[in-house]
Image 1 (tube, rainbow, N blue to C red):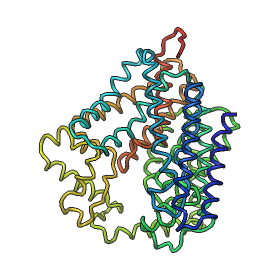
Image 2: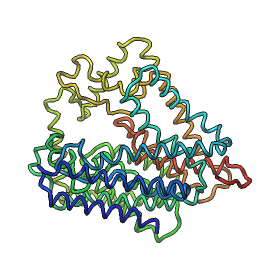
Image 3: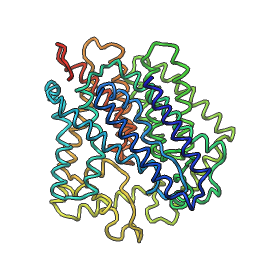
Length: 479
């Protein structure tokens, strides 16, 4: 019954978006999304608080299964700041942060066995609070809150009654809902790309109710779409490498092909490096490496055949069109994305800011200021850093970077399996390893600590691994 709730929500929200889009003309629909957001947001908030208060552990399981729907948003011919998804998502995420924090506070005595783990994870976030005190900023506070997902979901899973056997159900439901969400990409591909294809400017795209690469009546940002597809791909690959049940072989093989197809439609090159690195690690850690190599080979041969047939000609045309947008950009470089020029400008400006800034950082959300300072990037002043790891160095300094390394070392330590680990533990370790590699590689060229698609589904198996190793043997009441 609980699984019907997210499906019903997705259908109702999608139908509502379709109705608004068809019945209300663009010039008169500006109040529609806000009114709908107020009604729908109030209903979601009331349901959230009621379920969370009455059945906290059951609600947590449900939340883990349906959080993928947080990236669904109704599409309108409106600028981004009036998009219904954005109107709902920020307060909903804040509610989740507050509720998870309260649950951890109430059950804090259950965290005692995990102190050896937490001493690796929490100093990095404590340092962010210190830097935020040195350089107070409203945007910095938002950045700090958006990066709390890993420790927050990790600790709330530790104090919950969840067990390692719950992981399969959470990930399967998430994959199904992600596939439904990603159909928005395929649906636009089926009906044809936005026309004319040369109009790839972000402002024009938002005015058309689309993202830069794709849109739809309901939809998700391109980065979220490719990241959800990456996560689902890695889960299916790890399942094939561990699980012995033959019934899931077809489902996960088909899902791998579907996710790769969706990623190809976004026109992004980053997933090539993310999935390549994560797949190699997952296959290397698996006792069934041969099966993984066979699956990847079949998918690769199939993809090559489809590309040769001309099926993806429009995708390549879109990638070339987007690439041409950089021709007049002073940050164009051999990487083809402009990131090298952006990173170089940010590092140079950061180093010239003085020893204190190099040691302590320039403050949360200051990386964009360092990128756009001076005239290294010409007259445009709206570039972002596009790198999680460099952002940590620039915003939190050398001290913050050292604690950042400690944070990841603490997570890697959790992947050491105990003696006599069963299939469930092996499965959780492989999922965590694949997602960890994915988040680290994606962090080279983008922000990742604020992305639910990786942070939540990395923190959950890691917490369950920690519980299996460190949880007290005597049963306890989780309150």
